[in-house]
Image (spheres, rainbow, N blue to C red):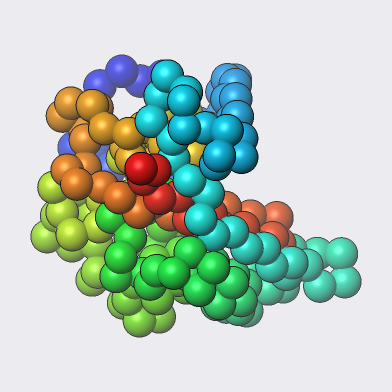
Length: 203
């Protein structure tokens, strides 16, 4: 939409929309489409592209009295995050320390911090410190939203995150490729619901 990078000064000089969130903390609205094809593992071995496995998935419903606002204000969806984490990591046989690339719903910049805290990548309240010093960049410890996410690539209810994770595990993305990526995690936490999927590199 904008077609050029923003600087720290651009961000700091932008108007507040709802303090402390400024203009660039919000994603833009746009149109787009994504197709995800899921097939049984035994049927995927002879396909043209390398298979990526769905190794764990989970869901938690956080609506209270037909509203999503109360759980969001209460604990930033952390109760839902914890519930989903207890489903996906054992199912996939991994822990947060095994995740090589992470993608989360990010219509607002604060979503990433809440997801990282809620899924145990750092302690609650320490998300801001965790993302410092290049930790979530392509060559960092935990690359996040590597395509730019909803804030910088496209707002499609975060469906664009999932093909990006598949591509990361298949390899060949050039400058944005996470080297050696074998385990990827997707999180969608919005409208009172939290869903997550663990993808792993196929044989």
